[in-house]
Length: 547
Image 1 (tube, rainbow, N blue to C red):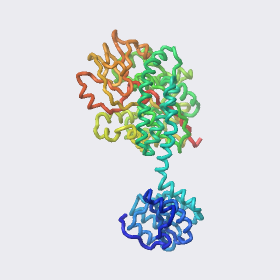
Image 2 (image 1 turned 90 degrees about the horizontal axis):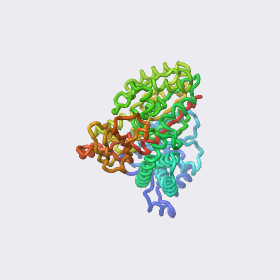
Image 3 (image 1 turned 30 degrees about the vertical axis):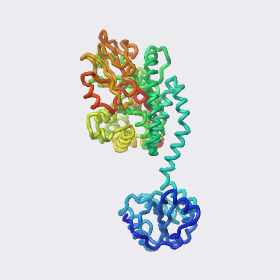
Image 4 (image 1 turned 135 degrees about the vertical axis):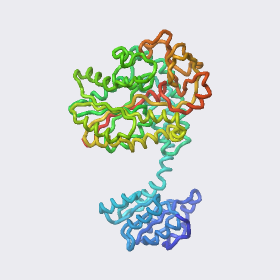
């Protein structure tokens, strides 16, 4: 709106109010409110109440003059009566939305008619008040709309400041898988909460605590993971346990869905429940991805219920002791069917889909809905969007800009879900009353520190983990290195094979390609190594609200 002089305003509102309000306006620029009502004189106590709270209030008695004024003066909020002589409030709103789509408007009316309320909502009013209203009711709405963000920001800062010392204490005492997962989960929530509140400064404190956690977590995993694999310590819930501990409990006459979102970090998952809550009741848990945190190992572990050594032993032609990843996930449907038969003692009908693109969304939903007609079936869906996103990001400057950091990655994840065939499918599934288990095989971490590794030509190419003979990182503290496949429940490899897993946010580079890899991959989201972001990942049961 262009800024010119005001039109016909009630004279008692053009004079400054003495005392407290005058002192308040020195501290901050007053937010400007225009109140449009043909009975504006009766609302003087409401307007004075807002002024005493630091708002600048102008009042006008009809819609035409209001539109003229709004074309000349900038206002932060319009309080708009619906039932006025001449233009009704909804007519004024229609014109205002065309001329200023982002204007903030509260409709104030005597009518409790559902149709009037629906019309106002359709035209995107920010709130709706029914007369008679008290000054405090009006103040509450005005404060929420005009000050809500800053209030939430201040509250988030206060809450985090009050929790900071406790988080530090929890970090100092973390010794178990449950304690590390709980601390990582809370820091993840704080990162999301403070980012949403715009508290970028406090995000540095969260990031610093996350750095410290990542370091201690890496050293702890180096010591504890081999003992878990040998049965010397009680392990946490692993990828291998998900079907038995989650999916099996839901089997019955109704079909059940298992949805695996490949390469989904915990913070990416945590921004999705607001989209899913209208459809499902969500029960969330956490599990640990097996090592390496890469699709051929962790996702095969979910579908088979086994570690790599057992898969290689029972299905040598499918999986074997191959060093490279190609083709190692071609048998997930049969691995899942085999696991379900072992757990139930009977053949369970399995329908399996691997989805790389939304282009076939309509056909996907048709096939899934057809499979749901089979009683007692399991419909398993693997969506590769997030894994493709982080790999494409590393190769594309455009995607690099779009997913610059964790916050941007979360935003992209939510945007994808809102528009995806999966979200449409979720709506249909909820309507039919079927339950869903949602999980991921592993997460990813933004890697900023290259670490040099010496290797022969037979070494695998992944930047977070490598197999090969005579592998040797220059900084031993940057990786887990073992020559014993039993430390990872891996099939026995060739004589002299070593297994390396990068810790924290390190990525492995060769001395001959040091500068090239540094410039190309620094800041990339990678996986396959040891960090909370890669290993501590979500699993959730979705129960339709329609049930």
